[in-house]
Image 1 (tube, rainbow, N blue to C red):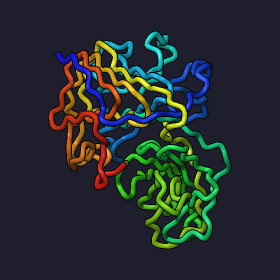
Image 2: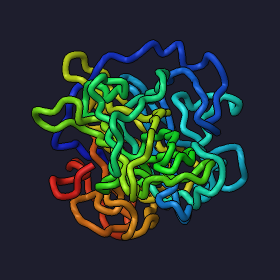
Image 3: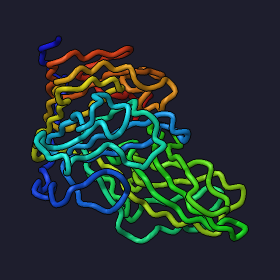
Image 4: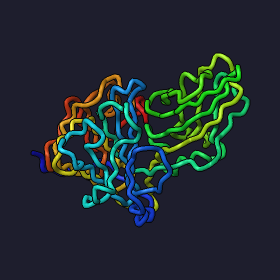
Length: 342
């Protein structure tokens, strides 16, 4: 058993916490993409691929908050199924108020990877965004800022979701669901037909961060793959996470893997935007994931095609239980380099 403190090579300050009293206004289970209030912790869970062979969970903590990943009130201590784990901001939270790690209903596949970071959920409340002069590639520039990308490092990879209503070149209609479930890939959107028999795009992307000179680049959505330009495409963003963390008003964050569990998932922790502590009170024996997973996961730790990584970037790391990786274990260094980027 390890009983050590690992100081990170770097630490950053944070932005003020939002009103924490809003957390408990109602009991919430992450079962759908319905409208809800912003809370201090949040969860996104999506399939790694359209086949639903495996899935990942993104755990967000807002500035100045703490998050506890703990065993649910079911017999199994593992995370093989969504209803066996909870992510909460108070370890004494009643069972009726916990976040079950289950963003979408069914077909997600076993949970193989966790990504823990500082951020908050955004929810789109405006009208659908209509494409101007759609071609075989349709671009929705974020010039109006309708898709809020925050003030830190943009959209958290693997969290964006939207729907699109399409009238194709022949006048047939279709509706599709767009999920950025291939983080780190050039075309990071998975596209699923919801209804209709009209032609739909074959691939798409949401740009998660800005580039110099193009401030509206972040939040831009691009769909491509039509053989003939559609007559119209209307995009309705749904939910996504944005990074938080600001050097003007430091607020620390803390993540705890609570006792009573045996966690085998690939485990990525990026709390570098805040003064932070990551504490492990249960064994983390990471073997999960696949070398063919999206590069955001399989490339974490500076090496491509990895499985079972433990990559920890936090000001302080406390281990009160065994923490091991079947493949790659790094502490206090960034999760990605410039070749493998989120």
